[in-house]
Image (tube, one colour):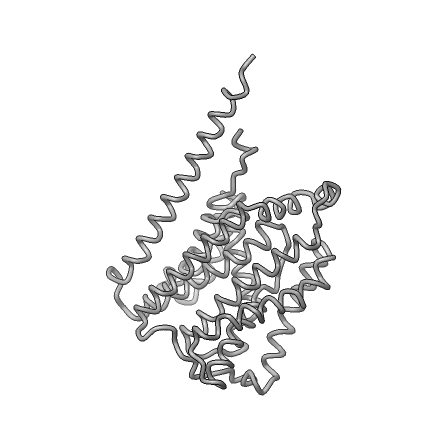
Length: 319
């Protein structure tokens, strides 16, 4: 009979190997991101890379909701809009630096997460998806009709976080890297394990003593904060926001990045977000056919890799 330690050691070795692989891959990606401005120094390329980094933060936040906890959210752009508009209103109306608006944005997005999540998270599957889609549209239409948000014209003259696009890019990369690491740590924490229990079988988790409603609300609030902070970066990058930037298509693209990369996989979601944000620019030479080619490539990838480009592997699967 094999000793328990003999079977446990190879499993621990494989787990440690995967952990090291993901850390080295993350470090290599960070180095490439820091060196990119020296290789591609055009203002347009720098703007695209900054947008891609912000998109990575959005996907990382939605991954906590969809990937970790299994809640299908089709209106995630609502929190993106709440963060952008909160920072935009405070910086233009009250003259606050963009950085000073961050604590207020966190508080407002937590409140928004509770207000939207509290009545909806008792629903499941398709019903939850429809309700979150409705809330996403409500936020956009509200911003389109309020005077304080500038109505259809939006808000202009939002100050940046940095003095130059290059400095703003590096600051964005640092903030996004911290956000991705934070989301990954949450996924490995006790709360993250509870999220995965709820995702796998909510009824069984409830029977085992997990307060599933509070656990789901915690995931929703965490995702809201990540989305709101991404909105601050978005407002600082463009210096202008309008309701047209927060449509359902944006929510669909973020969800697509999570699914394409691998739901529940932090490195996979980063890869998926980069692919979704940069692939249309790579295909720009195809002019009118680039979105057609973009769609075809996505279909091919999902047929070949239905589990995602970098799927999450649990300890149970590796043992």
